[in-house]
Amino acid sequence: MAIVQCVPNFSEGRDLEKIEKIVSPLRGKEGVKLLNYEADKDYNRVVVTVIGEPKAVKNAVLEAIGVAKDLIDMNTHKGQHSRFGATDVCPFIPIKGMTMDEAVELAKELGEDVAKLYNIPVFLYECAASKPERENLAKVRKGEYEGLDAKFEDPNWAPDFGQAKKHPNAGAIAIGARKPLIAYNINLDTPNIDIASSIAKTIRHSSGGYKFIKAGPVEIPERGITQVTMNLTDYSKTAMYRAFEAVKMEAKRYGVNVMGSEIVGLCPMEALVDCASYYLGLENFSLDKVLETSLME
Image (cartoon, rainbow, N blue to C red; front, side):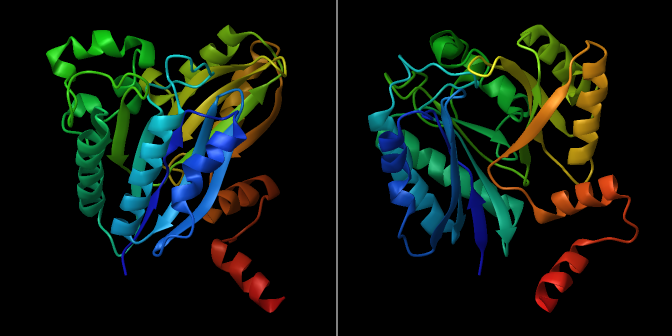
């Protein structure tokens, strides 16, 4: 049986009643399991993880996108995370019995449905991108919601589905297919966003840093700190511990300390085992040994 994971990001992280209504279509559906949803007030965003049979997941997510369209007004939305739509991004990740090409087709089907049913313009990104310049989500989302009108004036940025016109309150949406990634944030004990920005620029691939790191700066005013927020697009090539140590090393240049870090959404066990092995100096340690220990207990 084919299994796909979907990680829609909705632009609401503060109103719990709205969040529950948005995730409601993802509950109690045959062939769909809601694994996790995690809201962030500073980002004003909720990251949802669902898994299951491809068509069932697609239909449930389509319904959730419709609810978000009705509940979220991007004209009044404020948050620390980049965004251009009520449902900002929606990637499909093939997990079992499914190829990346099939995940791409699923993304295209959802995109066509979203444009037809909700009149929301859809951009395809990552492995589903229709053009090389649309593979990178940051480029697709550049200008954010406030820049959509100007973006649509450029014929090179016509949406893949729907009209070249933003939805009046839901904006636009990026739908794609990709490999599993880790959303990973590292906290700095400084409110200076320029320092976080400099560190992010140093470590991200687009600026000459690590190949599988996308990074940017974020302010957390309530805590008086900043973050280096990252997507690790291939944790097997650039490990979490490597990203953590790189940020610590760069922070020292500015007399800044790393306070801790956080994982947003789910994280593969293999990535955590890799970190444990590195920091504990374990020899010949693997995920298999973790499983064997749990079975013995």
